[in-house]
Length: 82
Image (cartoon, rainbow, N blue to C red; front, side):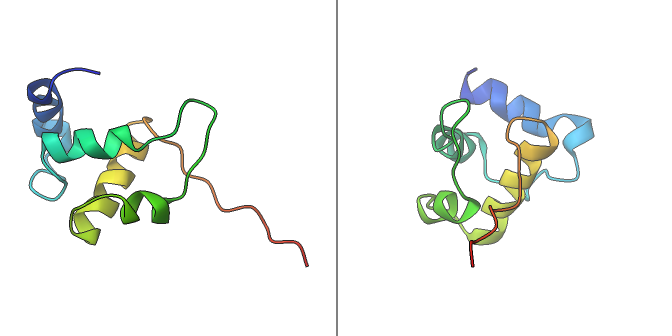
């Protein structure tokens, strides 16, 4: 839970150069992080996108980037009962 400046520095690391300019900036990323459930909880990507005031494509890339960093874990939705 560092500062926006620290988060911005992490976004700008050379290893993350592929996402530089493609994901939301640090203040927007902070908003996205506040939308994550408590450890052990779950939410859907759709629910996060609905509550996030940013264009859809950068928001999706941000969620995938967070998954790459191990901050979030993505899994398929549970199978629906017939």
